[in-house]
Structure formats: C-alpha cells, structure tokens
Length: 395
Ligand SMILES: Nc1nc2c(ncn2[C@@H]2O[C@H](COP(=O)(O)OP(=O)(O)OP(=O)(O)O)[C@@H](O)[C@H]2O)c(=O)[nH]1
Ligand SMILES: [Mg+2]
Image 1 (cartoon, protein in one colour):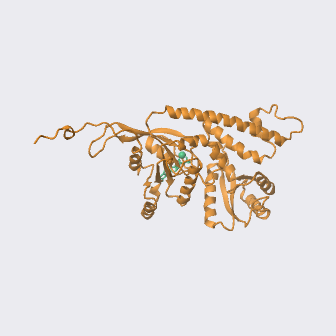
Image 2 (tube, protein in one colour):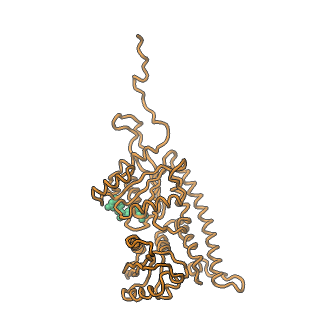
Image 3 (cartoon, rainbow, N blue to C red):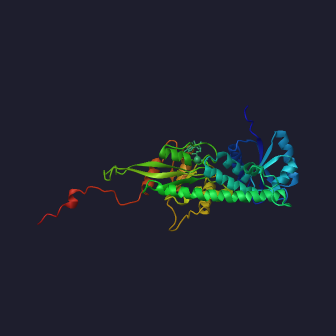
C-alpha cells in the first residue's frame, strides 16, 4: 500500500505593516517545510487582518471561508506560518473541522521524523514537551504509552490535565538529566580527538549546502534537497594539502588536516524550544576554533538568511566581534546557479566571501587555504640554507 500524502493549505496573516512579497516569501518557505514533512501543498493563502483576533487569530469569518475552500480542495490540514497559542489552535480546529499546525509544530514534526541518535531524539522530545506543556488539552497519549499507563493518577481531585502536566514535567526533568550526561560524553569525546587539529563548524541556513561542503572537504555526508536533512553533528577529518609552498618548496611536506563538523541548519523563527534543546549539539559550534558560514547565494532571500544566521549564532553564544569571536569565513555556495552580473554584485557586497559550488569543487582551494591558516603551532622545521649558516668572509 502506498502512503497518500496529506494535503494541506498554508496560510499566513498579513498585517497592515507587512509587505505582500515578504509574506509570499514566508509562505514559499512554509511550503518547503510542509514538503519536507511529507505533506502535499494544495494552496497558499495570505489572510489580511489589521489586528490579531484573540480567540481564533485569523478571525472566524476568514476561517469559515477557508474551510469551504479546503473541503473543495480535499485538504485535511491547515498549516499556519504564525505562532499560535494552544487555545487558538483548538478554536481553529473546532471552527473549521480541520487539523491545524502552527509553524513551530510543523518544524518540531520534521525534527521528530529526522532524529536518529539518542541525543537528537532526547533533544527533540524535550523541545516537544516544552511546546506541549502550555498547550495541553487533556489527553497526553504519547507519555501514557511511555509510562505504561500505570499509577498515573495522583490523589483524589487531581484533574486529568494536572496529571498530564505533572507527567510532562517529570519527563522534562528526565530528559534534561539524560542530555546533561550526553553533553559530558560529548565533551570527553572532544578532548579525545586527535590533538592539535583545529575544529571548524559548518553553519548556515537550512538547505544551503553545508553537508555538500562537508562531502567536498572530507568525502563523507549525504546532501539532500530537504529542509533539516541534517540534525546530528557529524565530525570528519579534512585533508588540506601538503605543508609545502608550491613556489619555494619550503615546508615539512607533511599532510595538513582539520576537523570539520556538519551541524543542524538554522531557519527564520527557529522555535526557541528547539534552540534551547539543541544547546549541547550547538555546543560544537560554540567551541569550534572557527566557523564556516555556508549560504545559498542563489536564494532570493540570501540577505535575510544571513541576518537570521547572524542572530541565531549570537543567540547560541557565538560573539561576532571582540576577543572571544571565532574567525569566520562566509562561503557563498551555489554560485553555479547565478549569472555573472549577480556574482559581481555579490563580490562587491561580500568582498571577504568565497564564491563556491560544493558539488563541483569550485572555491574549495580558497576554503582550504583559509582553513590552513588556522593550523596552530610553531613554523614547520626546515633545513637552513648555506648562506644562513656561513660566516661572513674575512676582509
Ligand atoms: N546547484 C547547486 N546545488 C547545490 C550546491 N550545494 C548543494 N546543492 C544542493 O542543495 C541541496 C541541499 O544541500 P545540503 O548539502 O543537503 O544542504 P544542507 O545545508 O546540509 O541542508 P540541511 O542539512 O537540510 O540544513 C542538495 O540538493 C544539494 O545537492 C551547489 O553549489 N550548487
Ligand atoms: Mg545537511
């Protein structure tokens, strides 16, 4: 039997201060998120509303119209770009008779589908618990399954919702303890890695090409055209060439390496529960010796993406300037999809950036040269030439 994808209708509020094209861009990104979750997008709608309706967010009249359209289109799910409260989601579901997901719920769902390792699974579950806690309706089947349904109800008079809240809080404490332990394991692993090699983290907006660059540098990693394809940090060794100046022949001739970590992508309005829960994974970014910021140069929202990446890096504790700031290299990836004038324009706007195409290897030499500069230590031993040792001849 083949799974028929659930058809969804996407919507976003357009307030008086919001530009139409911005909301359209946000809806396009939401469509990518929906596609990455396995849903089929039937339509996208901007709902003009001067002010948020407290109970239903979008207002009952607009929602009723939308529900009729949804029925005609065979849609079973409404996906909203706005972050809604639990009671607003409930009110929309009741009014339209359709399931409703907000942006955070959609992103959480993708993370849940992708999580592979024990750490990623625990991080995502923690984010889910933090998200659901203020949204409880009554039943919390997910935890009932885990707890085996035994001895759940407390003393007399404890309502179902209180039981649920208590169970979630207990689970949150368990998950935090587990993650603290895993973070220690990770820190120990970091210390045990080959000494002296610089550690570099690939960071950037989701789907920019971080995994493709990891693959180009190290030969490992599976790039995919999906948002949040990568959740787990993968660290691999990259070969940066011989320690040898091709012009003079100076250097030890030894191969030079660094460690490159691929990390989870960022996105506009990345749910704060996820940022908090992924602190330990993102610790790889915070403690890296340098950051390579990968961006999709061909994306129409490039500058917005860069701003989001800058803000998210600040949020996770990576200072952009000052003594603590890590060296950063901006890689404008996917330039194969750009015409020459745009490339020149980007060269003017971002003179320090490397223009690259990870799959073909364009720009890789420049990136490697930058990474080589990070290798610490005294200059490699060399044989002095005769003139350096000779005494000046007398007379
Ligand atoms: N044309 C072109 N496509 C690229 C380039 N780099 C990556 N891609 C494609 O872009 C898509 C995303 O690449 P990934 O490397 O998986 O991106 P990512 O940043 O790791 O994405 P997430 O892990 O989902 O955050 C894949 O389909 C890649 O094949 C490039 O330079 N040019
Ligand atoms: Mg990736």
